[in-house]
Image (cartoon, rainbow, N blue to C red; front, side, top):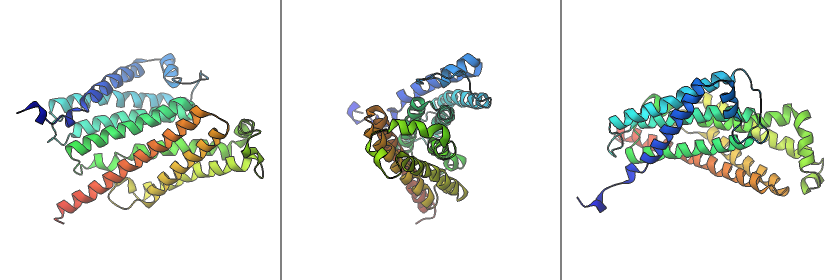
Length: 297
């Protein structure tokens, strides 16, 4: 066989899986064996104003994140022994390994979001979207037949990601306005937004309303079991549409005050959210196609 005819596409994911497995193992072991100083260090990654305290329940979440991080390389090793890197393999253990990485990053992202570590939250949002890109690559190259629990729960971290990314700041704007509104008024003082009828306050409340309605759509979507990706997903589609629009509105606000880095991050948020939607849309279409094949349609 000529080397030019060898299909290398299924192997492109291998270096990424090796890197993921190594970093997940190191970080998971550090968290599992660590003390309060280690926990605080992890929660302060990228943080401009380091925190010294955190809620007690974070220890449980950090433990769960550590377990999922350690589980990922174990699943990757099993995948290697099962030769799942072949294009003919369904790569179930490989998919579960990537899903374990997604779970750990989602738990981590929730904690830094609650602590208002915005830089870490943004990086972990993009990290999650990138991991779903890896999952999409594996499913595309190796097939994605409906596989029970994996297929039913693989998108649940996306729900959690959008709920806490948008729901928490929306809650702050509406129900903790006394603490946050002054900061927004100072930020936009002297800009065109401050010259609107009512000043900046109506704009902030409107953004908060959009941020709060997205978790409502997602909760309705959960009750409708749209996450199973085997039916129409109108409320899930609404949540993605509103999320992307909200990120762009926030980008507009930061652009007005010439915060280029923040505005660019929000463009990344919108693009990453679009990527997550495309992953779910492709999965839905693939599931419908698989059902049609099984039914002989």
